[in-house]
Every structure is written in C-alpha cells, then in structure tokens.
Image (cartoon, rainbow, N blue to C red; front, side, top):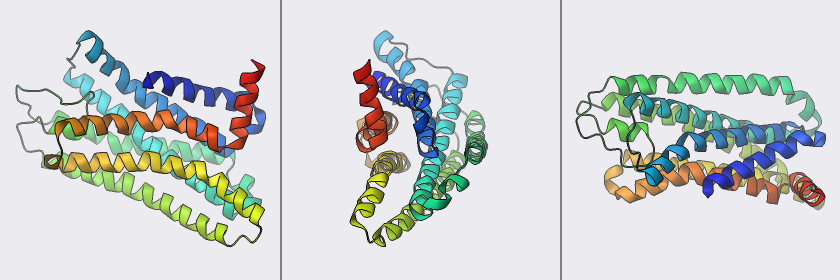
Length: 278
C-alpha cells in the first residue's frame, strides 16, 4: 500500500508540474527531481521485499546484492544533493529575490544536477568493490528486507575495518557536508525573515519555507538515526533495525508529495483544479 501511495503521489506531482507552465520554476523542477529519486529508491527495494513476503523468494545473488547497494546508495546521495539545492533555492528566493531568475537558471540547475549525479557515482562506486573483496562465511542471511552495505559487511568472516571506515567517511562527506550546507542556508533565511518589517511579507516568506523545512527534517532525521543505529548495532534490537531501515526509505517518499500538496498553495490549487475538472 505504501509503495502505491509513493508512486501515485509522486507521479501526480510530476504530471501537474509538467502540465502547468506556471509551475516551470526552479523550485518545482527540483521538486520533480526529488519525486523521481523517491520513486526510484522505493522501486529498487519494494518489489524485491514483496517477493520475499508474498512468494518466499528470499535468495539474492552476491552480484545482485552489490548492484542493489550501488544503485540505492547512489540515488540516496543524489537525493541529498537535491535537498541542498532546494535549500539554496529558498535562500536565493528569500535573500536575493530580485536576482532569483538570473541566479537559478535552468541551464545552471542542469549543471548542478549533473555535478550531484557525478558526485553520487564517485562516492558510491568504491562501496560494492570493497564489499566484493571481503570473504563471506556460509551463513549469509541478511536480517532485513534489502541489502545495506554495513549489514552485508557484518556477514563477512574477515576484517571489515576498511568497510567501516569508508562508511563513516561517506557519512561525513555526504550527510555531514550536505546537512551543514542546508543548516547554513536556513540560518541565512531565518536572519533575513526576522529583518522583514511588513507582517504580510513576513508571513509569505515564512510560509514559502515551511514545506521545504518539513521535507528536510523528514529526510534528514530518519537518515541520521538509521546510520547511527547501524554503527552502534549492539544497542538496538534486530527488529528496530528493520523498522528504521524501511521507515528511512519509504515514509519520506510517501509524505513528501502530501506535504507539498498541503503546504504549497500553487501546487495545491492546481491539484484541486485538475481533479475537479476531471
């Protein structure tokens, strides 16, 4: 059911933005990219998980597992880059509104998107290569519904220090840097909003950031909690890891279109207009 909600909700966002010329702005284009990453990340995981629960197809080859790890993590790193761009978009819209259209052009967004994609591939490519070099014992039961690098490395009989160090470095380079940039952007936004004297302009500036800020928390909080739980697994019960791993991937993807549909007036109005017309 959650997977269907993810596909329908994010497809609705993509369809409405594509149909409405007035929504072809950097903010909504970035929202579309985020919707695409949501659908891809859930599609990488959910069909295999459904095969496990419905058809008892619990086996997966090592190459299949490593492929899932690469594509899933690459999409998640790309997703993090999109969240940074969305925070930067709101920063420019609030702090430099007169230069918004000249700073965030479509060509520049495409270039930044390609940089984010390249970064994702470069950061994640070593991960399956490191795991492939590890010796694995006979007991290869992954205690959750999809392959995760830290979980897979713990099945190895050999020394996993390289894998652990790389996971920590990756978390610092990706999550640490990206979330620091997001926090910095919102720090400037809050400072600019507090300086606004007009109450109406103040409310408008605050409302335009509410949806973005909710989505940032929705993605960042479960992500950070999941990574910390995996690093300190001895302090958590096995079922907690399974729940956190699925919440981390599925819940933000489900709620993202709902948050934007409720909080963003332009998207909400177009959505109701289209549904009522149909």
